[in-house]
Length: 188
Length: 196
Image 1: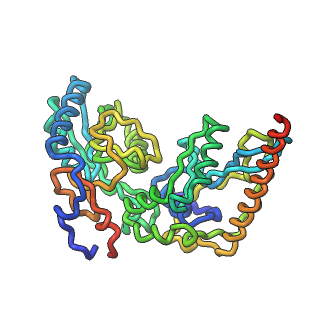
Image 2: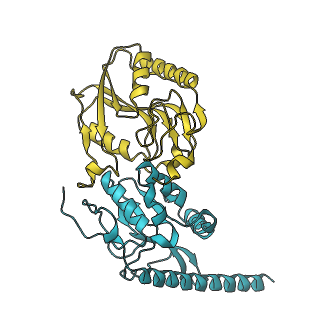
């Protein structure tokens, strides 16, 4: 990307303010704490986009939890094109056999990645496997995924911030915003 | 990894790209495995059919992909409505050009989007002639379903067939649809006369 990103000018509109996000995170944390009270819960975050959400959500949960991180390759990444198949770039550090697992996602759109992850994690025999996502963009869905904990349903627009990126930029914004189309349509 | 199988002759480069995406995420697919009659004449002969581009057997979902500009998709939308009316249990998703563009953007392949738009992306090889349509009202296999391949080719050039075959295919479709429209008009006229 030759164009120099501008964290302010490149945002067409703020979709979710920091305050709205934090209020929702607390609400989700409270629900999760109640639903999993007395259980052994592992939060599995999918890198990199869900890092801020994971960090805030785990601190809003009032029961003991373990956390783990996973990273899977994305279609179009140069490192993966030789195999043409999705790869686990970072696997779980601990066993989830017999544990209740909650996948923490930043956004679900096509559902392709999550569909793959669900199949992969089910093979590790968790006691239960559920999904928590901050954002859902149902207009893009190809694979139907049951969402157990949902923050916001958002319209079909290209969003950045609070972990979401375009070309690895904009993840550090404290809000979720809509990226100006000129940013991704301008010549590279 | 399983051995690579021959890829089907995709009608459009965008279809080949979608197949690569599905392969990448290990979603099983079949290419145009079923044809659904959607218009009949008064004798029950099939006048118009619809073959969704992809069938995802594990998800029981059909996907139709179009890279036509939004203002040109009216005919496709009409066919889809007819399909849903006749086969209410069928799960089908229509991916418009804007949807596919967004998908490419998500995967950092936006530069490919223009190459996949409309006629630029047309890439039809000589394809096996469709099988015969079976009884009215039933989905009919167009020959054996094409199995997914596990080894996707990169780039897409290998999936790009000669454009002349594409024009021939469009011409065949156009002639068939013109015949269907004419027959429908004739049927409508006949019905009006009978009512009168």
